[in-house]
Length: 146
Image (tube, rainbow, N blue to C red; front, side, top):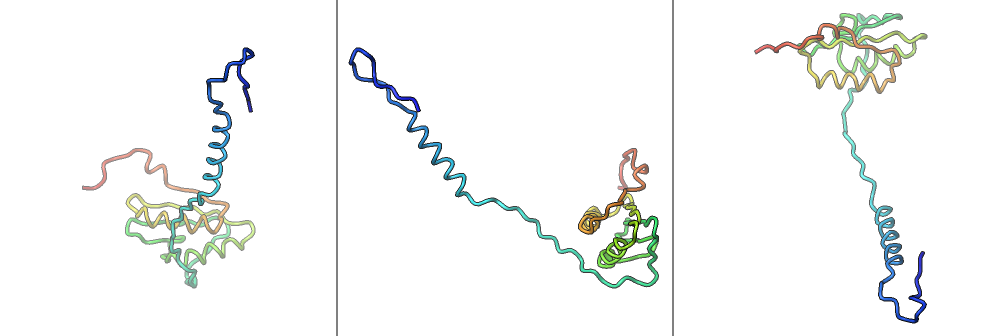
């Protein structure tokens, strides 16, 4: 902190020393920042609970294809499944060594909301071998159906 005792000629100092004022203001600012509660933003999502896997569902030890159709139907290697069954199937593929590749292919007019929920299920399962297929179909954008 800087201090000034006036001039050498004995005249009183005419400027106010603002250094202590600034120091107090900085301390108050830091105290306010520390006492503000941390803002937490959470988005609550109800994920589907695992359900039993139908016997007709096959799990390929090399690669599996997950398709979301335009009619919002989820297909695992061509077999229709629910979101709860998807959770169980992905959990069972995690037990295979090496883990099979999971290919995700949403159709052109598939529901974005369902595709997002499926991506959340896949992400939560920590699938390591994952890829999007069929993207070359959407290389050019055209006007949708009227």
